[in-house]
Length: 312
View 1 (tube, rainbow, N blue to C red):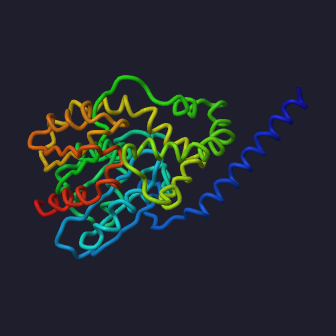
View 2 (view 1 turned 90 degrees about the horizontal axis):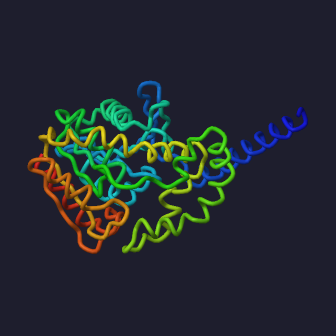
View 3 (view 1 turned 180 degrees about the vertical axis):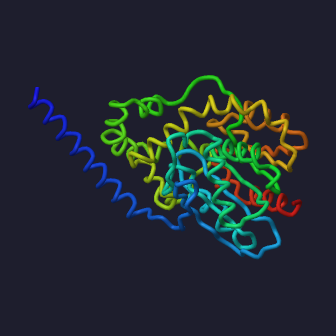
């Protein structure tokens, strides 16, 4: 028994060391590109771009699941920063941001992001969220709409959906199996399946050249990042059920945008229903467009965001 215990401990130490080396290699290829802000004992990684003295309200861009702030920077941030103050944030637990044990809660993520926004002095922003980031942006508005100028939601997750989530998101939370999954399976399997996953997310559109590298998607395959992302997804349905009855209380300007060919987040279950729930919300349907609409329909999205800031 003692020998077995020693072997197990050796394997655990080896796996931990290999995971650490892999994480170091990934971070070297996709380093942090912003600064860090302390909020409630956590460190949030933020990129603050564009003119700070712009008369237009600042923009807060909140990324979706699996990706980090680089995704929104590539698609929208660099362009919008020409004449807007743009703040991109790695959601708590993702990219280079830390988070508390309850960081999977939408309210916790919204509160920490609000703390960073306040620390930066970005008053009355327009908040833009894509996919899972749309769910966080909705919670941000539900809690802080009086401190906002508007809300733009891109293919947001907003309502209860039939079915569950991918098996590995649940297994990641298991004490033993999750440990080995994150340190042994995901670093290899994740890298191998990444390109097909990108194609599925963008379909029927084509991903930008070198998207995997430029978006820093490999950061997802670090054990702690994958664990946080999996917890976000595994708990999302219950979090959405808890807040979906409150959308009618939103009174600020809201724009909802979705692709009609989105097979990841159903336009019918989410965006169309959400536009009905929020009085005065606008709904834009982009034909033959998939889930990554902020990349494939950048011009249309930027136009909608700029219309929102001008309205504000």
